[in-house]
Image (cartoon, rainbow, N blue to C red; front, top):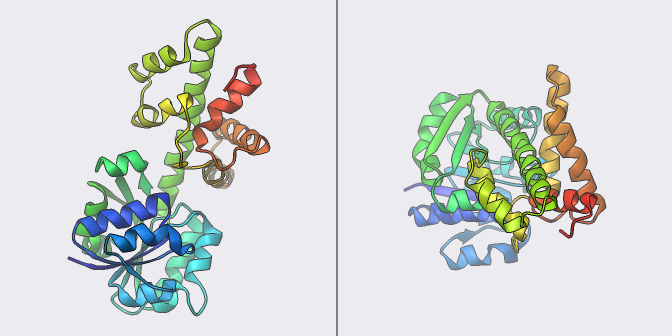
Length: 293
């Protein structure tokens, strides 16, 4: 069993840390808001007052935060995670950020004598709890092999996609499809509803049709009622779409459906729904269609 650290114990990070605890690992954690980690401390997780203290206590330290600014906040400075790294340690960042930012951080970790992997996940709370989460990994192949058993305690499918920064690039390429699929699903539900078919019937038919991807199967029912806690809110999804659009501009790849989904996420924010799960795309379209969300 490994001596692990985890910084960023939000909706997904906290559940991943719990999964590592359940696998028998010693885990020391830190979160900006201490109260959100109380349930993990009660489950046996150790607490550290700073990200640096987490890194100092662990052989392998993970982080999972919302964006590049949040990652800089926990990695930089005298109390930051990088300051706690030393030769032989491995740092695994599971955040969804830009490839450039990830590679820049990897260079700082390398300067500290440690090794970094970018390892974002594909899946949701439901996927994680079902033990079906998949992980993309960027970095040195030998480092990947070193931490592979721990990564497989998080999810069974671990794919090394290339050097540092490539996994987050793959993550962004994956996530843009989530918003696009949810938008198309919402269009279908609303078209059926305006034709006189009940929303519940339309959702049932679509979830049992050829268009029902794994993501649609677990998020599609959200059009019948949002979860109490957003799994992936509008702000987080739009952050990823904006990264995708910038990557598309740099790489000369047109992303027309991504651009459309991004505009409707902007509409969601204008309506005050930025903290709802991005499945609120349905509510945006319903409002535009004169249908009660």
